[in-house]
Image (cartoon, rainbow, N blue to C red; front, side):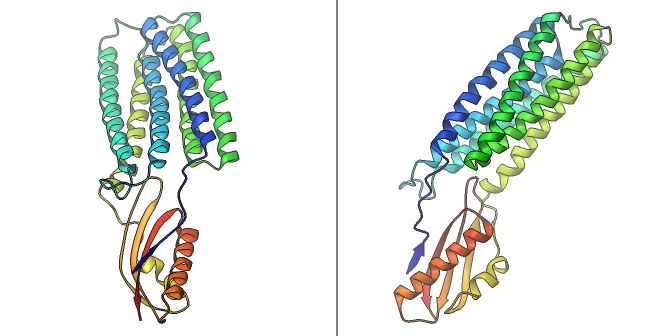
Length: 292
């Protein structure tokens, strides 16, 4: 006999999805402007910054996909749900970031060794960069406010990444002024810095993704021992298995109860589930009941 947490996960607030859609539009606008002025000016650092802004757009798309997957219930082919499809998508993003970063590094080194092809900075370039900075600051403030209002981890995480984009764009805006005054070597040097920032973003995604794909354990028996054994009528528990997920974790175990009442054991098992979720966060808890 087993029991499972009866509470349904209805996923993020629908308004969070609408907010992410609007933010995606703004991020794509910023990406298009930076790509245009970067190519027009021949600036590697601005092109690199456009790639960094592209990561914001990709993150928005992944977040929207995760919301969609979270709304789809498990089926016969996917009894544990569809969340790992989003994780596979994150791996594809890592591959894209790695290739792009190495290309930026290669172009930066070539330009440093061959200083004949440096960017041409015009006043329009500076004004367009200021415009993208203003848009990013608006997105950052709006996301932070919405994240607190809807208690959304997705929006808060995306706001943090947008803030890093603000820092990169600000540094480029400062360097553009010096480049326009003849400090041309700053362009490839700054592009190298951006390439490593992008690689770091890829590493963070990879570090969060691999444990999910390989079903790394979420909790060990000793982590929940006191919590389970302090529940009334519990004699002991065995066969603890858990795994990590992106939006929720999973754990199952066999619990022995000192009672002949199936209803009482069922109610006590729900107490264990609630304590695990309250202590360790969002999870799907499965408890197999055995008489003591």
